[in-house]
Length: 381
Image (cartoon, rainbow, N blue to C red; front, side):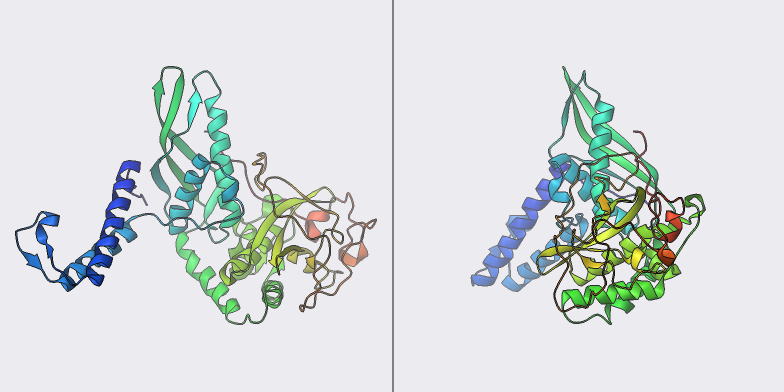
């Protein structure tokens, strides 16, 4: 599916025209006057006020739906540069709609020295934008993370190179049409959520555990959907990445700030969540809570003093460091109304999961809740 994008100049003109029409409608609504049709280069004469209002509103609606939607604010978008934000906005406007390719023109083109390593600079630019998008959009489960193509358009000006725009193409690991099944599964859970944010988060946590079972085995045997919210909520089988994305998806739709966090537990790659309750972030590890020998809430709304073994990594994408920062985790466990009883892991203890087995340095950790994430590096440009 291809998308048409207006140029930066066209977008500015459309914005000014849309603002003018909004002003015109307001003026006509508040002033009992008639306006010459010649404003729009029509025949001489006059329209009644209500006709102009209807005409203006219709054009405003048309322009609104023809422009890409502005991406919502996120923890990570604010950490991006202007050019990275434009790439992020392009991705978030079109990839969730099922487009597999699109083009974009920068409103503020990045400029690089002609003698520098432009390829590495562009890879970092795109990689940081994709990392932020990847963290923010768990509902986009069909994109093959093994890579995508990014083709810049540029102009050479003496000793510099101006990147005026780019085109991007992605490949699919599943069909975007399957999103309806994920939406239905999420909606059925959201209907049962009520109470405070902590109570809703607990309900989401419990719903994931009741619907999903951990997919053990070698990383090479994973189905791509086991690393997605789709695997956890629709297919009922997922690894840690799928658990974490499922919780973020549900929290997103309930208006509860939630982040996917990547890192290690005892040297094994793992993913979990930070959920904001009453202004502070707490750790939720639904994967570990779904492990044999672990209490249901041992890793629910925990502070850093209880989960010292969960070590953050700066990137969720293997082989790439985006340098995006996670929210600061509360030092203490959540002490509000939600029952998050469970000892968790105290300082000085090793991660203990199935049957109390010490998994520190164990080769079987991936089979007991700490799995190797399936995120792949951004392809070479």
